[in-house]
Image (tube, rainbow, N blue to C red):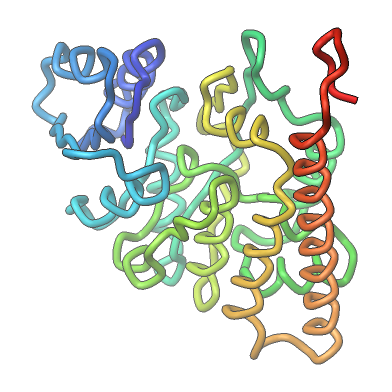
Length: 292
């Protein structure tokens, strides 16, 4: 569990993990130099499965995830967010699914969304729900990254849409995760989706068609903060570049051309957004304090 200033939520998140029916695990809490009472809450839970590590200085989200992978010692590893909730049978479902597919690199399941408080990103709407409905209606229990990339480029869905989900609802084979590591620290919102695709370049991913937990959105959640910083066009361009590097040799000439076009569009939109922001910052103010 990577943590950073999660005092209001971390106790519930920890309890949801410790209450798992599948109990054979170690819970490593890797705190990223919190300045609130996060570590006090964690230290107050007396459970032999908990091991605490604190970074001397803040690494940042993706870099702390990489540190988690380095310190984890089990055959399987899961990154569980400090503000999410794991269903009582969530871990067991993911383990069973992954063990049934020895060649798979990870397993993942559905999740529910809860949005609370002002400033929080709203829970995904009908568009994303429709995308997931189509995704889970696919035949078979596994899916390969190359198929997802090809289908997206053929126009069936937006390639930047993370259909696998967040780390809290994914269980990885540690060996496969280390081969694909590190998480790209240049990405702030798509670093998990980028990692899943790189992991599954040569191995399938297992789908668990059941809810394995709850993703909580609030004003201080990473997702809300990322979107509050403005459009993610630059990040989309970087993500698409990573996809090209990983999957380019496996794609047809037409798909590679479509991928390049998407990157150009994202780059152009990122440039336009940056110019617009610079103009807004430089705009003179009227007497009422409002920018012209």
